[in-house]
Amino acid sequence: MGKLQVLHIGLDDTDSKDGMCTTYVGAVVVDRLIDIGAKIIDYPHLIRLNPNWILKTRGNCAIAIKVEAKDELIPSIKKMVLKTVEQLAELDHETTNPGVVFLKGENIPEELGAFSRKVIQDIVTIDEAEELAKRIGAEFFKFKIGRGIIGALAAIGEELEQDFTYELIAYRLPSNRGKERKIDRESVFKMNELTYPDTFDNIDLNTGEIRITPHTPCPILYGIRAESSWIAEKAHGMVKAFEPIERWVIYKANQATDEHIKSSKISEVKPYRSFVVEGEVCDKPRIIVGGHVIFTIKDDGDKIDCAAYEPTRKFREVIMKLAIGDIVKVYGGIKPKPNLPLTINLEKIEVVKLSPIFKKLNPICPLCRRRMKSAGKEKGFVCKNCKQKLPRETVIIGEMPRSITVGIYEVPPRARRHLAKPLVRLSPRIW
Image (tube, rainbow, N blue to C red; front, side):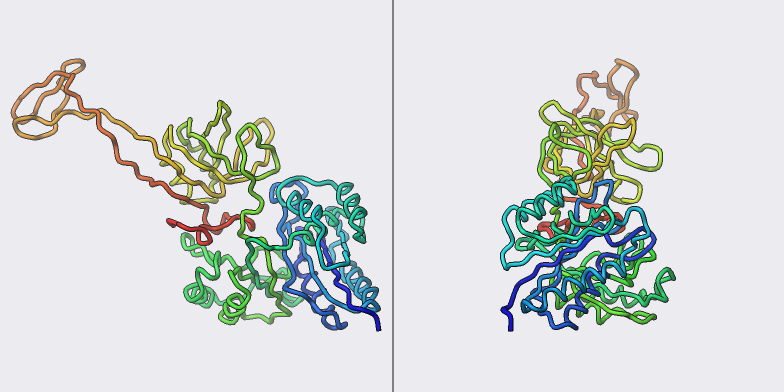
């Protein structure tokens, strides 16, 4: 009898825009691991990667599974995983390039952890992934060009020791994929009422949209995001589906953690990454074609545009209340567009300090205490009631109340990225 070994399994890039889902491949692998006698350690990990990279997959997630098994079972595990990927991955699609990684040993090498953070926040090449795998003794397998080894390594390297969430994903029968999802709306609203904020982003209250169901032909029926595994399972029991569930799985995830965000100065921001930048509003927010709202911030002489796009709905109303001189922290990603300046696509904004806004006001009549009117250009003021006159020097400079307060504001669930941390997971929150 061989000794027990710890084996880390990473996989990525098995889906396409037309179907499949890397989380589903991971769920099947989990079930098959149990069937062949491997012991799964902890929940499988669902790791969302850099959401701004041009080559990202639809859900842009990778899966890692940690197992304990006897030496003689390891070859069978590897064979099963590779066969499962080959069976389920959308290999006919040009952009689907799966990768599978196996790493033996309990401890994750420090440089693999650093690599994982880079994949989530930055850009990494296939060559970098291969070189790292060889250095740390990881075994990797590439399907086609094998871009998925990048995410597979990153998923293994993200141990989720700091902030993390859970997601319970229920999957459809193959015969139902591509058809309208049959979920009882009222049960989702009731589930949200009973479990929020321990579950979150279940619905968008502004539009009444259910947010636990995707809108693609993938195998997912619904996914419930939660602060704990047990509350995810409890919420799952409250949702009524009018179609069979093939299987379900609970993932431990970096979703809703802001792990993709790096603190930066404007001069240091780059395309295809996500940042939080503090600056001063130097250009009044304006609405452009399409209903998008644009404004500009500056720091140390550098400027950058920020955008609240039409799908963010009421969030744009918040942005329109900003004024020149306000100090803000903007959170978001940058995807360059031809012939346009770099723009931070807003996920959240923190209003740090409001600038005072002053307005000239006509004086109050000293006799009848009514607001006076202008007597004409350069002629001062006159009271329409008693005809009292005052010189133009008596104009009042008053500070106007602001319709926005210091605090953090976010886009609605319908426009939220997987990695963006909702305010319900922050404190304090305002809406």
